[in-house]
Length: 413
Image 1 (cartoon, rainbow, N blue to C red):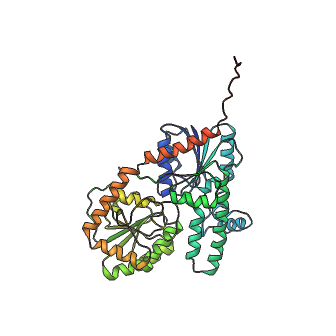
Image 2: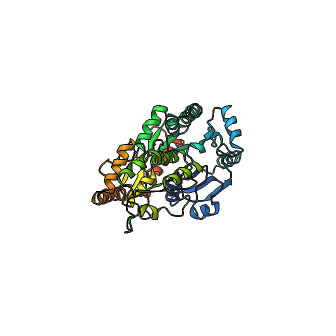
Image 3: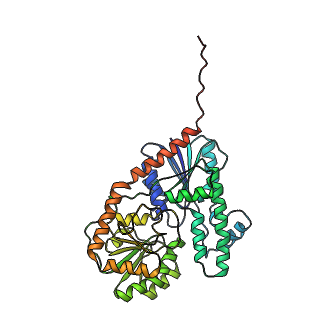
């Protein structure tokens, strides 16, 4: 197949869950298919590094673009323009003329058998009417993230803004699923959610994967009573989770384990998070080259997410490193895990704190959960298997789009 893969916001360095999933799948597919990647790069991205990492692809086209963020002078303009359009601001700011032109040229020049729009943000740059079948790769149910954030917001003004945003996201997500040839989600739960949104859409699911050779235990000694969380801290659900943890969960843990410490590892932490962490004596690393040393030294890996969608690669990475995980139901959503078997589920602050404390006090239980998690991901969730399922779905779309061969007429004897 000739695959045109469109992804906004860069792919390298591989420092977000979405980048990890996309790069592993692209790399696997490039072993057997011809792939052209179209993406963008901004501050902190490395387009030359991406070209080297994806050297097996036919072409890697990365266009410069800095997305407007809160605090930028261009952000209020993007917000105002989005309010006058059917697009939420989170999609409006990713509508990029140069990307749309590049994709249109590639499709017109017959460079693709199928076009993969990676995240909903890419879909706004791909023409709807094309002879090339389109696959929407939904790492999250986007509107669900915004709806959950809206429900958590205390400020009436911000809540009103988020109410408008999640409804707009839902409308665009419904339209996107209905207009493409196939939507691929990363969990069965997300598939069912999108089918409720767009009942007549064609939607399939693939599992989440993990590189079990890269994320592996190496015998590093735990730091006593150390907790760790990893993730992109400029993603609002992650920031919300850590602020919630610092305010309501960590104090409860420290009442029972006074020397409990927390490391928050991930790129672009906000000033708000840094200030809260400093007051609580919490380590915030910012961007690191390798999260594994921080995970290896931790006694317990925590995922206190209250909003989000898709599946958390971070949980599979922690399990692959044989770490015991305590997560909210939302945090572990979509993963085929059993609470008490491969991780512990806890949703309110007190039960979350109690679950963490019980593990901190029980080394044998921590080790047993870690071994169970490692066995699970080794046996079922390698990236080659995940990519093979993605490949099969793309091939089915291409086959369905091919015209039936004209059969010659034979004289009837």
